[in-house]
Length: 109
Image (cartoon, rainbow, N blue to C red; front, side, top):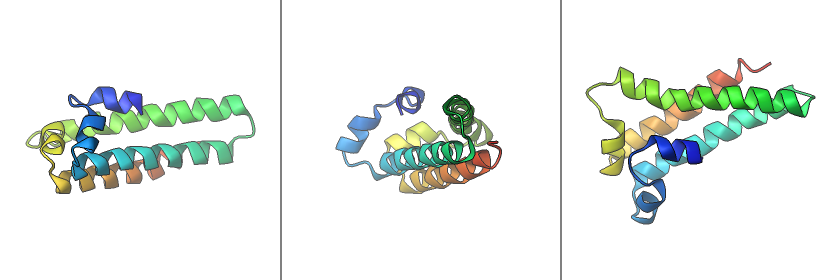
């Protein structure tokens, strides 16, 4: 989760302490998306090394989702809206993370 935290210009933990629901939703989506990818990688691989490899690949893809989503929505600065507490953007990011983690997981062998 440190890598996700580095991608945002604000401190995720400070926003959570402040009661920012939007940041909490986005962070929850990151956690759930990561857990889905890890679970599928563990379930589909018998070797710990293959599991770690596929999890790493899936996790990098999930990290790229934020960058790509931010890029394809030029009129919407995700980090600014999350920092301001825009719950709609937080919920949208939650769904994007979870949905993409299922898509990414379907490619794990």
